[in-house]
Image (cartoon, rainbow, N blue to C red; front, side, top):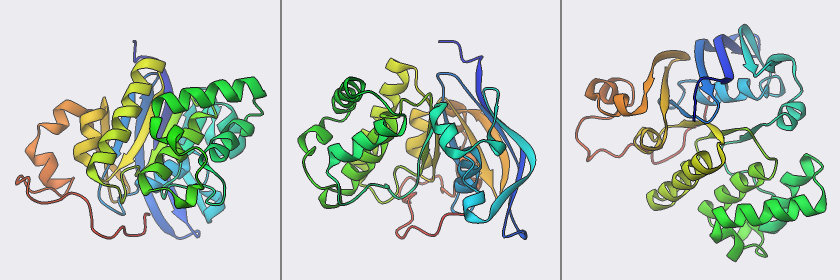
Length: 265
């Protein structure tokens, strides 16, 4: 599969909040069609802000892109309505497993199909596809989302995004607060979606170990700047990268996930 066709292009993006606080000082990276790209960095490095810029969600939070450009194919993201971006295939799964807690798992999934006004037969077919990728959701389809586990809620949020038929799936910290075995399971499924259906994926992760295992390429952010980009395998093998940018001491005994999730910037 040729990774030469650029799907998303982020160029020299600067962003501020409340007209004053600079969150991004110059972030550039691309996602090619059929590629899995990870955005890595410590808490507060600017990962969430970058993803919100990519989905044009910053204005809703009194933020703004002040410089640079973001293109999804030929679409200027900074002037597009978020709903139009979703319709054109750029679909984001926000941090924190957003589910409608009082709806069942299946009702949650169906809302993703309604967003693009899918026909009933299409929605039914898409549901079966999601259940094939996440058999756990099929078992729980009649359970209220609010009563399912954190991992199941994250799968529901991803499943709902898949029901919108994305061409680029954007995920913010899918591993946050989840057990390592569940995280592996979710990333394995994302990789399968990428391989089998050509789904392009942009994922922001603090858990660099798992992200670098499943991504093709990665960009590391530090204090709102993209400091390093490269092949995931290369970055995975560089001790200096692990020590300086990913806050890992070379000893594998240090956990890479903070105990309490801080507020994401």
